Length: 144
Image 1 (cartoon, rainbow, N blue to C red):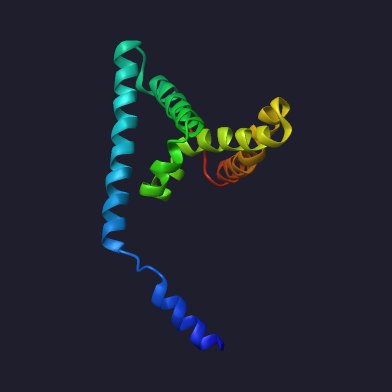
Image 2 (image 1 turned 120 degrees about the vertical axis):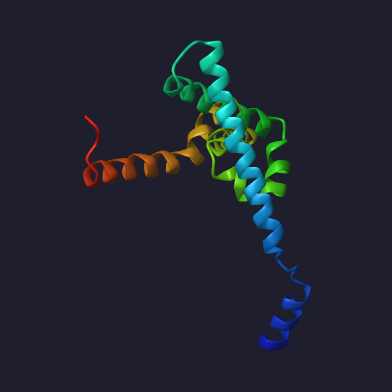
């Protein structure tokens, strides 16, 4: 079979992307994540009687926790199949990668793999965050 014939067969059987639908899902899921984050900030600032900037820390920890929890019970991957990258980009992916790496290593190395696996997948994200924070600190003038 030549390359052109193969390409025709692949193109015929490849599902077409519905960009309007994907855009609406991205807008909806992104908006829901933003609403959930803002709700958590308002909830924590009201319940704990703290400022919004302090409540933001609790909101981030809560979203990471739910990313970990949903990954551990196998629910996060089902949500991501529907929402695609709309849930991988926010802070929930940090928890997802932590637990996903831990579970993958634990299946091979046992309990010690839990600790080792947590930092396998997430280490690249931490390195990029530190590197770009340093670059932005050099480029932009920080507040006094």
